[in-house]
Image (cartoon, rainbow, N blue to C red; front, side, top):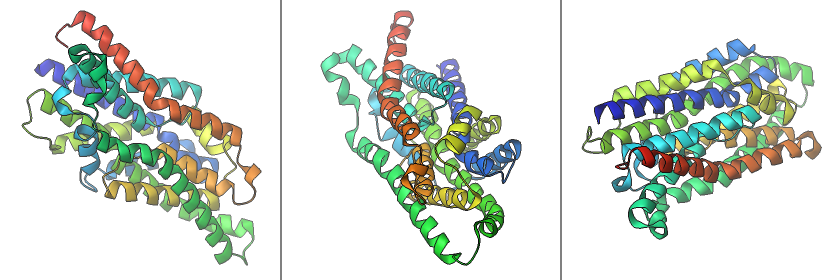
Length: 339
C-alpha cells in the first residue's frame, strides 16, 4: 500500500505540473501579447507568484475537492489513480489542440468518473451516481457559468472606468503608463491562480493519504502544500505556447491597458471564489475577462468563432475526462481485480 500511495502521489504531482504547463497561458498570455514581458520573463514571473501562494487562503478549496464532491467511503487509491489519468489525458489532448480548457474541471470529472465506475462494479450501474455528493457539485457547476460571466462584466466595467479616468490621455500615453502596472496585475493574477488551482491537487493527495490509511481525517499536511505549489510553479516555467497563442492573440487584440483590466478582473474573481472555498476554473475566468476587454470597442473585436470552440471544449471537459477515467478504471480492474 505504501508503494502504491507514493506512486499515486507522484502521478498527482505530474498532473499538477501539467496543470501549470497547461494553464501557463492563463498567467502569461496577456503580458506576452502586449509585449510587456518576453515569453521567458513572463513564465518566470508567473511561476514565482504561483509558488508565493503556497500558504495563502488556507486549504478550504482542497477540502471541497478532496472530500466534498465524492463520498470518501467509495474512494480507493485505484479510484484516485484512474481519476488523475482521466484528467491528464484530457489536459494533454486539449493542449495539443490549443484549447484553453479547465484543468480543474478535468480533475473533477476524472475523480467523479472513476468513483462512479467503482460503485457500478460493486453495486450495479443504477447505483453509480450514489457516490456523488451533489451539494459539492452545485457551486462547481454554477461557477462554470458565473465565473466567466463575472470576469467578462468586471473587465468591461474596469475598461469603461479606465477610459473615463484617462479621457484626456492618448492611447499611447495610456499604454506607456499601464506597461508597468501590468506587471502588478500579472503578478496578482498568477498569485490568485496558485491559491485556487494548487489546492485542487492538495485535496487529491490528501484523499490518497486518507484512503491509504496514512491520515485518520482529512487535513492537508504542510509538505503536501509545498509539493503541490512547487509542481505547479515548475509546470508554469515550462509554458504552454499553443494555448498562449489562442489566449493572447486569436481571441482578441490586447494592449497594456486592456491586459491590465483583464488580469485585474480575473484575479479579483478567483480570489473571491477562493475566499468562499469554491474551486473555480481560472481558465474560464481569464477567457471571460479577455472577451470583456475586447468587447469594449465593438462586439466584433472578439473573435466569437474562437470563443465558441473554447466553450464547446469547456462543456465537454467534465464528461470526457469522466469517461476516460471510467475506462481506465475498467481496464485496471482486468489486471487488479481488487481495485
